[in-house]
Image (tube, rainbow, N blue to C red; front, side, top):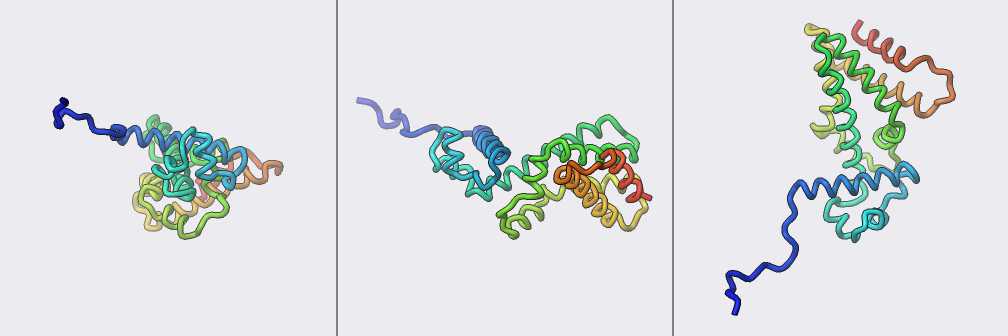
Length: 203
């Protein structure tokens, strides 16, 4: 007779945090693909379960609902954008060059990834409270506040860094918006527009 203390516990072994994060990434990848082809309205827990190959309850075990998935995608895209900027900054030490590189990379990221731009800045059917909660999160703000740090490096004695930062960010987002939503207009080179915007901000 088997000793009770040697009896194996029933059920699946507890998943590691890495496994959970990898599965969330897998769900997020499928959600983004559905969004790109059909829009976020086509994303549902049942649809995702079918695409991923699991039950809807498995999706709910990783995300509270559709809005939670959207927030996950927002965070993932912003992290990807920030990582791209940080990679470029490794090769520059001069403050003005670092700010220029960051601004050009920021705009280029959103113009090169129009689907991600629409997902982050133009999502429909999103509750304002959900957007506010996401935007006010420290991790989200860090993706934009890095421009404050870069401007301070260029203008260490400047008292209105926040005004300059907000002007730069809104201008860069505006340039990307025009490129993505009115592509048929004969815009001048996006690099030149970004450069002119930056020059006016730090003048």
